[in-house]
Amino acid sequence: MDMELSLILVKKTQIVSSPSILVIVLVFTIMVFMYIKLLKATWKNSHQKIP
Image (cartoon, rainbow, N blue to C red):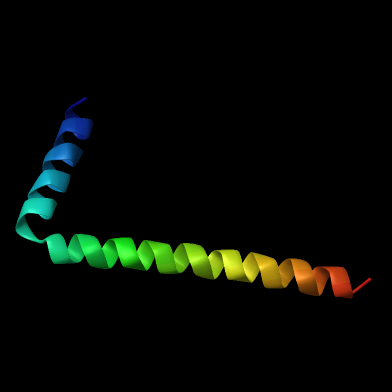
């Protein structure tokens, strides 16, 4: 419980102090997600062509 509370507090202070970092993290997460999706798609395509 203490860990969860501290995490929530840290998140709240981060959001209040620096919303720009939150936006950067959000954009970075989306970029990484899209990149992984792209890699999976290309891997599937290349894997299908080999046999």
